Image (tube, rainbow, N blue to C red):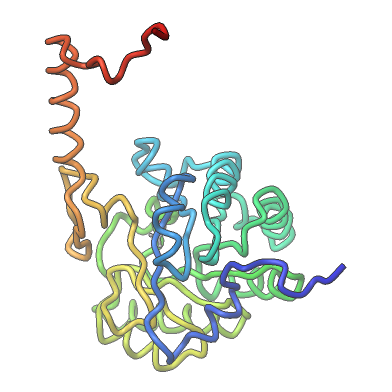
Length: 273
Ligand code: KIV
């Protein structure tokens, strides 16, 4: 049996090799049908723990579990044939020790067949990243704004304006790159700093709220599709307005059901003549 070319999906190594070629296209995906639609256009699909907020209505990502990540990782893998699929390690599944991180990352890889895991953290996670990558687990880093740390960092705001903050993000990105990650998300970080880090480190930077200076971009797909009416952060662009379309369609459906105009004859089963 050959172990060469076992997947047609883009590998983490191929994502790493894209640095300096063209911008890397990535989005989050949580379900099979959405993964199928996004897959042909994306280099990387992230089963982000943002699913806790986007799909489950949680206030933060802290309550997301391994079971949720595995179930959605499996769903996305059923729909993705081309993009590299990465699954987030949820809060509490990797911070305790590098051994805990390996155990949970290996479980995600085994149970979903995804291509790698993402974890949040900089210098303090470098040893863990090195432990995982040297044992066969591709790691996608995540520095700058780290949503899993919202309870200690005090909320969602852009970072890097003070020299102290900038220096921390700089050191974090360098540590994660040198520890062997194949790419790193830079979230909520001012443009000049994202540009400087992108030039300084060997691996691709994937920005979210970190400017076009990064090697690639990621957005929460529900944000990109305009599925939320209520709040649009500055870094989000709606490439469609699905929320009002869904409201209008549902209103039309409700009217037709009440008027008994749906289902019409063509939607019903009749005895054969
Ligand atoms: O959980 C997530 O969706 C993420 C991305 C937005 C980077 O971490």
